[in-house]
Amino acid sequence: MSSFLGRAARAVVAPVQLARRVYVRSIQARVVISILLLSAIVITLVGVLLTRQIAEGLTQSKADQAVSEGAAGVQFAQGSLDAEPPSSTQGTQSLLLNPLQSALVSRGGAERSYEIVLVGPIQSSSPVGARYSDDDLSLDVIPLALQDKVADGPGLASTYTRMPGSADGAQAVPAVVVGSQVRVPSTGDVFGLYYLFPMDDEQQALSLVRRGLISAGVALMALIAGVAWLVTRQVVTPVGLARRIAERLAAGRLEERMHIRGEDDLARLGTSFNKMAESLQRQIRQLEELSRVQQRFVSDVSHELRTPLTTVRMAADVLHDARPSFDPVSARSAELLQAELDRFQDLLTDLLEISRFDAGAAELEVETVDLVTVAQQVVDSHVSLAARAQVTLVVVAHDPVLVDADVRRIERIVRNLIGNAIRYSHSERVEVRVAGDDHAVALAVRDWGVGLHAGESTLVFNRFWRADPARARAGGGTGLGLAIAREDAMLHGGWLQAWGAPGQGTQFRLTLARTLGDEIEKSPLPLLPDDGPMTSVGGPYARVEPPPGPVVMDR
Image (cartoon, rainbow, N blue to C red; front, side, top):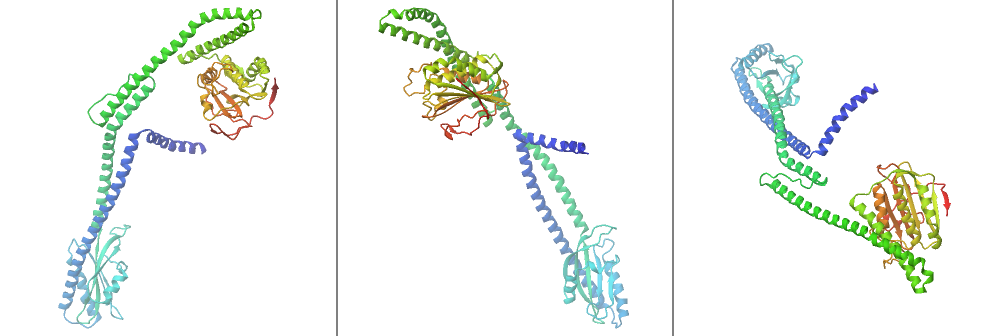
């Protein structure tokens, strides 16, 4: 039973979902459906108004006809009674009224459109009773209000009622009933004469009109749907063509253009679209050419500088090794030359790496890496630098935290973050946190140094940008480290984000998917540190607590 209900539910839900997708994705379907709904409302209102007016016209016409025929019948009946000789007994009255009843019935002929009820005497304590028509109608078909009005005095009165159908089991049909008094001159008794005019023909005519209006409305709706579909197609087709061409342009097929027909607004739109595409193509090609020239220049300069740099480096090494025999000024010059050559060589290496990213030639060598081990190895390599800066490096992590990544590039990111933290830290501690969940891993480096001002959390990843206002190079570095680190993170499909506050230090967070190519929904570590303010430079951050029970490795 449950499986049957499930299949029935799917059979109902599937068409609804299909219709919803069509309505949401097709502007042509939405326009046609909207036009059909509005047209249905208008046609329904017009049909109701027409039906009501026709019904009122038929009813009024039938009422006028009934009053006219009823007045003629009453006049004929009274004239017949006046022409009869006087009589004084009720039996004689019965003999008088029976022929009158038959005469009134036969007066309508074979196509008689009315029924007759003769009641009376209505002003006598011992009435003769009722004289009925040939159809043996009950007195109940005459409303009591009309009987009272006829009994009150002479004059013609009319109202509406319902009569039993002609066939067995048929529904009652509306009718017009006209009544008046007729007086027997010989006795002075008053009788009520009622004419009932059934409106079967009018009801059939009204039903025919309703069916005709419904058929016409359905046909009109079909025609409106067809016309709306054709009209909207003329508008939607060029828009759909523009959408497809825009998608091709976005995919890099810059030579795509719209076909122009006519001189209407859509044709002018297509012309403007083609001009825009040509302008974009021209500018994109100019930018691509400039980018290629820049990349080639950086690559060529970097390669060309390697040979003279190697020669100068060899000479500087000789001078540096021989500095004990120099005077103090010359010895210091040899040391400065050696340091600047080291920085120059690092700059060339970074420029070559940046040129690879710009050229799209950077590739990943993916393997399963323990991020805790990587962090510990980088910390071990910075022990001497940290000792000179009197900084203690602390690794807080669960073990292990595995991730699919290029270990060389991850080490370079972590090395850059830790080196910057040591260089700019004003405290005796730099903390490295590593954590992971089922979908992502994260590494955060926290220092308590100069921090970042408003807006600098995004500028810090720009090339050659430095945190100190004077942009001094006393702290070392090429100004490309964080830019390369961000490129490495993006190459993995990850995040590299920064938080900072003036005088409270900074925290950089690297987030990677455990499996390369998966989407990252959230990071296992918060960007806002536990000791940071609830509102950072870039806006509010949700506080996410690190996993409990960390293993602390203090170096």
